[in-house]
Length: 296
Ligand SMILES: Nc1ncnc2c1ncn2[C@@H]1O[C@H](COP(=O)(O)OP(=O)(O)OP(=O)(O)O)[C@@H](O)[C@H]1O
Image (tube, rainbow, N blue to C red; front, side, top):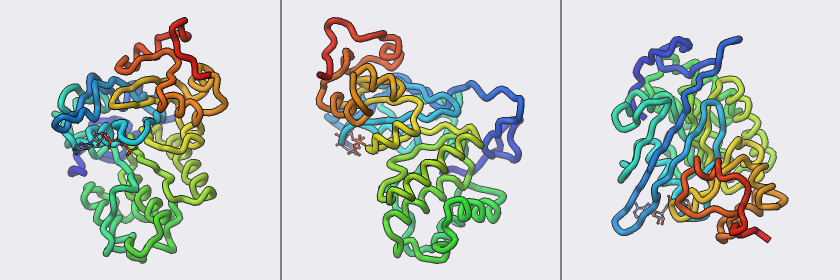
């Protein structure tokens, strides 16, 4: 992540810190993410094929799709790690391409597929990342995330000696160091036992409630998505092929749960939508029409 730079946010308690919603104050209305016409090609492969979506401030949006749907490529573009082939990304109302160094300190990400340095202890890793983020209150933030993610017993262990589930918790602690206003989470409960996974979900809900953070969540765990997500984007072959609140999708597909909806969409039994339509179209699409392909 880039060097932290001061923000003009009047609600900040320190330069670059996460915004806090003051009692009685109106929550910020600028969307955390606005993506328009986003495309990414790798040679002949079109990984992301012209997608549009918004993640409102303070909400959780889930990006779902089968293997190769384009989720990781989308997240990599949102992090500025991949250059889009076309389209625009605005974070907190600012253009990512031209304001990257201002925007990156306001966000963070966690992915089980990005390994932390194995030879460093948990605490050393947190120290390194806190320095990379340019945090002024490193000791305070490291102590806080070690406590919050219950990592005290692991703090002096080398990351390479930890179990997969323990590493997932450390990766999440790293992601919380800079009190992000926007969290990009790729499989945040991968490898966690059900009890710890439940605990992490409650932690994320609590963090969001306290800090008003927005979350973009990529997950294959539909129960998790039903619990955490305000809105779901269904991706298939680089396109958003359907979208809606989890309960709305379940009702529209006449299914019992999101997992069944996911299977319908993955197998192209969509409730009346064609690939490539923008989210705005999907959301204003109204009830399925006669030509809709029902899930049953
Ligand atoms: N660097 C690359 N070069 C060529 N093709 C790529 C590259 N990165 C991704 N792709 C292709 O782009 C498509 C989307 O990949 P992506 O990793 O975004 O999918 P995903 O939805 O994250 O899948 P998964 O759930 O398996 O992680 C795939 O067909 C993939 O093979």
